[in-house]
Image 1 (cartoon, rainbow, N blue to C red):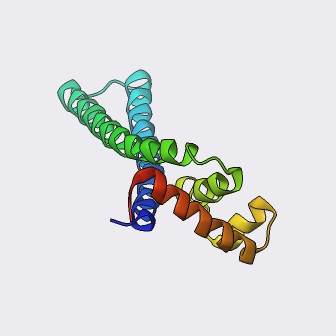
Image 2: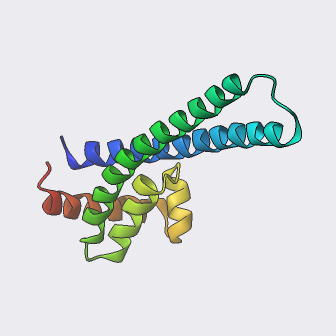
Length: 136
């Protein structure tokens, strides 16, 4: 695997973490909805209600475990990036691969540089990242 392929896989991981966070919000919302039903109304079948709550808790725990695995992968990459001495190199890698800034143009705007300069910096950042990780 090349350094760029690794970074692109981390970018995908970062997107997955965002999606899992959205799933967690939905699950928590459903749990809160069931809790409000329990408080405001008598539930006809407490067994069914209990099963629903247990199912949502199980789903929540599975998503949290999955997110933790992905976050650990993301964190390892972050630690590699932090070893790079040049702050511009670190910033370009963080914005694009870790923080999921969607386009190079947006990264350039965030860094207040031209796209041409951004690509030059990105090339240097990839080289430094390769040296640190031992990837191609």
